[in-house]
Length: 103
Image 1 (cartoon, one colour):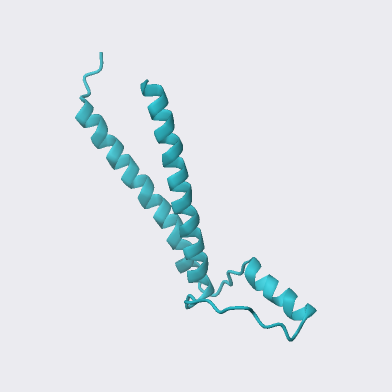
Image 2 (cartoon, rainbow, N blue to C red):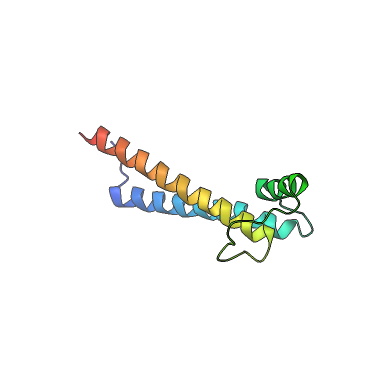
């Protein structure tokens, strides 16, 4: 029989989860500081170049409401959006699995 109480186990889980969250944030932010002159480009920029080659007079239908100050910030926001979405999906499936195993 284990001598560890439930409260102690939940404290350990909280500490582990906070450490994992800190690692994820560090892995997301550190590359932005380590690569000062790197160019982070995506498919949007390549699509704009391809459209300009095909039809030089093309005018977009609308303009964005807000444009990030740099491509790095835009990439960071995109990655953050993906991480939040993955977190919600993981939470949902974990919650469903917990409900199913609790029956």
